[in-house]
Image (tube, rainbow, N blue to C red; front, side, top):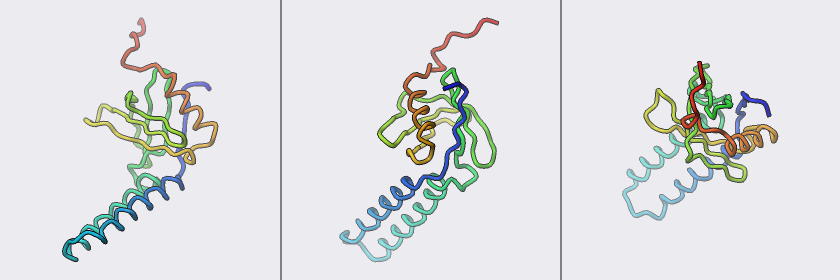
Amino acid sequence: MQLPLRLVLQTSHYFFVALLLLHGAALASLFPIHSPLWLKLLVAASLIISMVLNVRHHALLVRPTSICELMLMADGSVEITDRSGYRRFALVSNGSTVLFGLTVLLLKSAEKRRLQSVVIFSDALSADEYRWLRSWLRWKIPASTQKPKDV
C-alpha cells in the first residue's frame, strides 16, 4: 500500500437495507403505543422523511454533501471530498471503530466544531481497498502527535 491512498466510496446496498430495516422497526413500534392517531401519523411522517433523507445521503451518496472520496495520507490525516467537489482535511479520532464488514470513521475538521461520522460498509469499497482502509486505521500515525519537520 502506497500513501496517499485514494478511496472512492460506492453506494452501499448493506447500508441501504440496514437503514430501511431500522426505520421500519421504528415505524412498527408505533402500533402498540397508546397515543392519539394524529400523533402517530406525525411521528410516522417524520420517520419516513428521515429514512428518505438518510438513504439518499449515506447509502446512495446522491446528495451534494455526501462524502464520496477519502484520500488517506501518510501522516494520519484524511482529505475528504464530497459529491459537490468540496475538499477538506480532517484528522481521524481515536474513537473510530473497525468491525467485521463495517467501519465508522470519526473525523474532526477545522471547519466543523463536532466530529463527523462516516459509516463505511464493506460493499462500499473493493475488498482490497477495504482491507487497506482497515490496516491504515490500525497503523496510522496520529497527525497530532507527530514532530514537526525541519525546515
